[in-house]
Image (cartoon, rainbow, N blue to C red; front, side, top):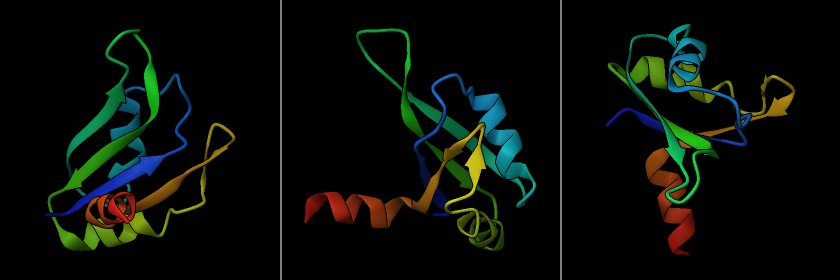
Length: 86
């Protein structure tokens, strides 16, 4: 799976905008912003799935870049889950 997690996103960001940010790395199959279940707002993180591994690798290089002034964190989705388990 060629999936990353992007954290510290601006709260205004939409899935369309997130997809556009990462399309410069390669073909994006899906961009998903995680939403609060009780309130209509984002949680500040989301997932991006790429068609090809090389696009995902390019996206990982965007770690600590900025979107609207927020320094984002970009990690492999699987690694992020493993860190939460520790």
